[in-house]
Length: 414
Image 1 (cartoon, helix red, strand yellow):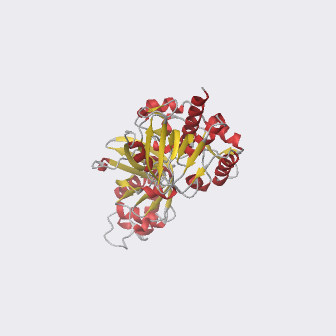
Image 2 (cartoon, rainbow, N blue to C red):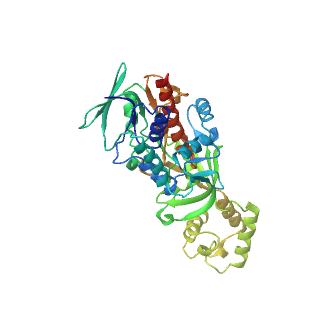
Image 3 (spheres, rainbow, N blue to C red):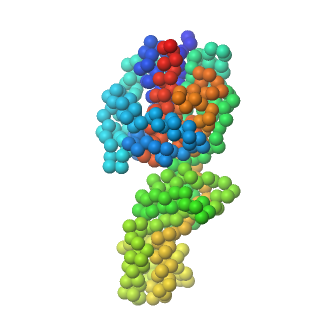
């Protein structure tokens, strides 16, 4: 049997492509091939198990790509309403939070996968799980998909929607890039994204500490990121939404020392107001230990860490009376602009997304079809597009999948 359409990768992009295709051409055949033992595992983990499936603010500034002009054309045709319409037809009831993030109304990622699986079951779309693809080839009118210890599968059109390299335990192990190279596609260099950042200055004493702060990143003298939110300290590095966001702009290389991250631990308080508060503490606490100077203002472990870096503590029991007025100003400036030198992204298993991938210049932006190999398509994270946190990457995955499914269906109906 030769299928009209084969989907390699049963994640967000692959499932939306299969459903969209069947909606367009219910009499045509489609099959889903998944490496893991079940489809949609990564969907279940998104949004901390709540599945932040889209956002009301879909715009170019929320995404990063080496081909921004092409990306702009593509996302301009992927409004939030398209995602909501797609899931509404599947029976999913959604809500939007105060920050514009869209979730299933019951706040459970499992229901997103449930409505998609129900459609697939009712449409009798075959799903093959635990399938390891060894290679792909193409004759003039048909692809052959070779599977280890299984019979080959034949299809007229193929979608590679295997994700990138992030969270390999949920299915994205980078295999799609090896498949794409079989058809002469190139790959924009890959790196972990939406991921914690390692820094040698962060020691074990801070592990698990969370704090609300403003985060800015500079490359040389140019500011390239600015954000505010909760930062979490992990062993050897920093995490949290603001750090995930800036990870899109940090490039680990021999020149990574060009980057500096500045942390403002009191973003709602001006420098002068903070200086006045510390001056009052200084004048009223002469007989107190210096290690207690910031107690009540910050987490104790964080406060001690900062004082060690901002003060010349010659001994553990130095007293506040040892400080001078210039020391108070120096500490104030440090609390408002504490420098951290990032060294690298943490590993792929800590990342939520992949930066880099198949260049948009190698696909038709109207259909996501390969410009190198006709009837070969790409969708989702495998493409050179990454969004910030907030539902943007899932929005990209759903909508590129929908684009592919409709494009193949429309071609077959002609």
